[in-house]
Image (cartoon, rainbow, N blue to C red):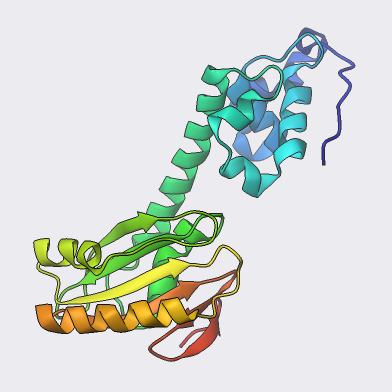
Length: 238
């Protein structure tokens, strides 16, 4: 939605107790709406819009998913948003995303099922409009050594070389690996190319004595496990 907001008040005309920063200090962050949180990041508005109106406009213009993936150039296309404010917005959103991911992943140290893998990487994929390819490196006991971003593609595909997949495996002495990538379309069903790549990786892994346990394709709230050869809902326990 691309709706203009008319500013009826200057910020100095708003009761001080109702201004975002003062509300945050007095009542805590839970009391603030999204536009108020964003207004604190922006700090100031324009002659036509106070900072709250500008924040509302940004949230309406982008929407949650689009804002999370917005570039500096896209944000700067909005009047009143310069490079400094655009960078502040992006940094705040990505910091929050990373902290959330770290908290969620802290509990997952061992892989016992494909659902463990899905829960480990779904935050990387859920809001992305690009295809990411990730390798989960495991030791002989299925403890997670690390997760490695192998490549990031365009809107429809990414190019993966088996050499790049197994390079970190060899370097970190992994005995097993699970491959994960997303389909931005939301449909996790594997293509012919996905199945062909899986077979190539299994063959290459056998030569290196590194077992490819699974290739998991992430969709919208679901995933496809090639080892099970089936689509699984994201909230299902195995």
